[in-house]
Each structure stands twice: as C-alpha cells, then as structure tokens.
Amino acid sequence: MNIPAASDVGTSPPVSALRKALNLQCGDRALHQEMVDLLYYEAWLLDNDKFEDWLELIAADASYVAPIRRKIADEGLTLASLDDHTVHVGHFNDGKMELGLRIARMRTGFDHYNRPASLSRRIIGNIRILGRDTAADTVTLTSNFLVFRAREEREETLFAGARDDVWRRTGKEWELVRRLIKLDHHMVPPLSQIF
Image 1: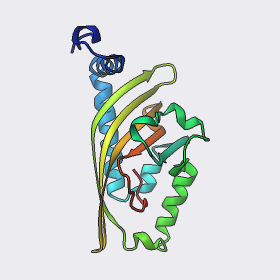
Image 2 (image 1 turned 90 degrees about the horizontal axis):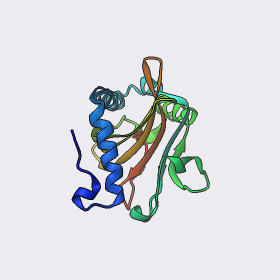
Image 3 (image 1 turned 45 degrees about the horizontal axis):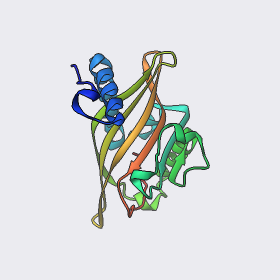
C-alpha cells in the first residue's frame, strides 16, 4: 500500500507520522496479524476469568497505568512519559506484582465488589502498529477498546478508551512491557476491571 506523501495532500506533520506508521504496518502484514491475534487472545483470557494465564503475558518489569485525564487534548500522555512518575495521578499505576495481588484478592472470595463475579466482554479494535525496535525486539501499538461489565442485576457499565502498548518478544512468546490506558470518561465508575 502506498500512502501519499504529506505534501501531496496538504497535511500537517502529525499526518506524516501516521503515514510512517501505516507504511510500517502495511510492510509487515504478518506482524500486524500476529499482534491482532495477541490482543484478541488477551481479551478472551480476561473475558473468561483466566487471569492467571493473562498474568503470564505480563513482563516482570511491566508498567500498567490508567492516569486520570483532565484535558484530554492537552495532556500529551505518551508511553515515554510513563517513566516520569511525578507526572501522573492515576486510577491505577501497577506493575506485575500489583496485578498479581489484584488477581489474588479476586480469588479469595472476599472481594465483595465482584461477588458474585461480574460478567464482562471486551471488544478490541483499530489496532495499529506505531513502531518497531528490532534491536530490542519490541513493537509499539495502539488500540481502542469497549469493556462491558454487568454486576448482578444492579449495574451495567460500558467503558471506552484507547491503549498504547509496548510488547516485547521473548523467544517465541510476547510479553506486555508497557500499557497506557486512556479512558474516555469524565466520570469513571469503580475500576475493578483489568483493561
């Protein structure tokens, strides 16, 4: 696929970055399909309460962050900014250990918010590869999500947003190194879900 140059269509510099990402994605269809399948598999694990299997996809040095967003257009949230811990106040800012503790709490039977267990369904779409670092064997990608959650007969919630990820290949497997979750909500319901 040949994307027109930015100068050919009178576009601004951000579109040139999009063109570069599209050319990368179109240049390696096998990698794109592999990442699509990986994100669909991850959603399936979470939807089917296979949290321990999902945790195996998470790198030991992972950063899993859902910052509180004020002015969405002006915040400049990026994967690189996750390393600056002074920047974000978050709904959660977890590593693999904290994610494991959250799963262990849910398995105790005393997690009253999720008792009985919530029903959930994740829809993942608009998956785009933004970059590839062959030396580190990482892929940076973005995706959109909808998460539907139903608790007993009292509450149904729909979460919408985007995720920016860095996945690292370790042998034949992939592990999630960074995830920046951008919720598109001004009022956020209780977040017991893993996105």
